[in-house]
Amino acid sequence: MTILAKAVLMISLPVSMFAPAPRTPVTRAATREPQKHGQWYLAGTGHAVYCYGPVKLVLQPEGSVQRVATYCKGDKFIVPLKD
Image (cartoon, rainbow, N blue to C red; front, side, top):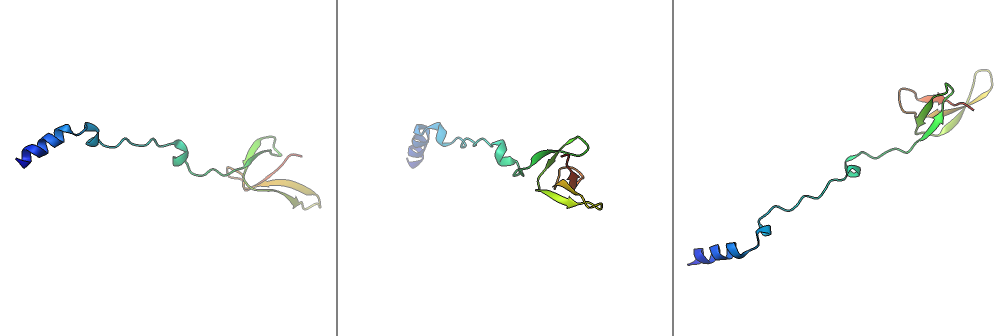
């Protein structure tokens, strides 16, 4: 008798109770790594460079001062800027 009562109870329950819970959508922002904030600069060669660090003044051997951008994207650590 208890088996029959359990079967009737199972049939009467809504189907969604046995269905797996819907998955929450994954946003692209959650999967990306945090972005460093930088700025675009015009290099002395005339090309645009994207750098993360501050702009500094560097003393040249002849005694003049030159502005450089630091921590630039690519293989350059310091890029001389066009004034």
